[in-house]
Image (cartoon, rainbow, N blue to C red; front, side, top):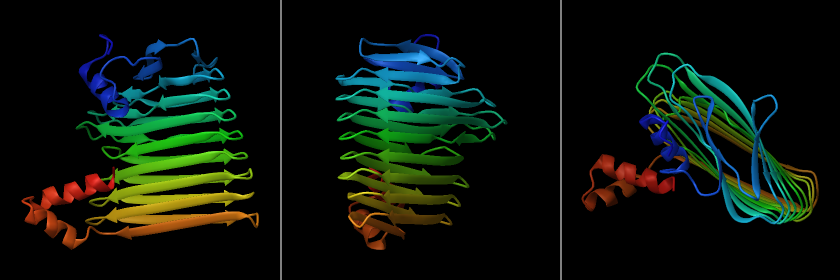
Length: 309
C-alpha cells in the first residue's frame, strides 16, 4: 500500500478489500474523503465526476478477466460523506468489481459513509461484485454505513453479488434495486451479523422484466446481544421468469429479527418462491462440538462462522 497511508487506513483496506498492497489492474482508493490512489488500464477508465461527488467507471466492450477495486476508508472521527459511483460495463465483458467501506472511529463524533452505486451491465456481460463493510474503534461516536445499489441488466447478462457486513457497524440501511431484461440472471449472497445495540435494515427489490430472466437472492444473518435486524426482500415477476428469495437467520441473546419476504407476480408464467427461517442454535449442535473438546463459546463461534460462510 502507499506510504502516505497510516497503519489504521492500511488495516481497513485489508479488511474490506483484502488489499495488502496495491492491486493489479484498475483501482480508485479513497481515504478520509480524499483520493488516496488511482490507476486505469487500457480497458477500464476511472474519472472523477464533474461535481466531485464520486466517480464514473467505464469498462470497454469485450473486456475479460480484469478487475477494478474502489474501496473507501474513514479513520477520522466526525467525517460524513455521500459518494455516487456509476459503472458502465460494455457488452460481452467478464470482470470483477471490489468495493466496500471500513470505518475506524476512536472519537466522540459519528462517522458516516453513504455510497450510491449504479451498475449498467451490457448485453451478455458477466460481473462479480464484492462489497464488504466493516467497523472498528474504541470511541463513543457511531459508525454508520448506508449503501444504495442499483443494477440495470441488459439481455443475457449475469451479475453475482457478495454483500458482507459482519463486524462493527452501529447502524446500516442497505437498499438494493435491480431490473433485469430478457435472459438476465442475478445471484445475491448476503451475510450480515449485528452485536450489542446495532441496527441493520436490508431491503431488496428485484424486477424481472424480460422473458427467461431469473434471480436468486439469499440472505444469512445473525443477531446477537440486543441488536435488531429487518430483512425485506421483494421479487417482482413481470414476464416469464424464475425468482427465489431466502432469509435464513440465527437469533441469540435478546436480539430481534423481522423478515419480510414478498413476491409480486404480474405474469402467468412468472414462477416465484420465497423461504424464511429464524431460529436459535440447536442444542444438539453445541453438545456434539463440545464432546470433541470445544468449550461452549468456541462451539457457538464455530457454528456461526460456518453458517455465515
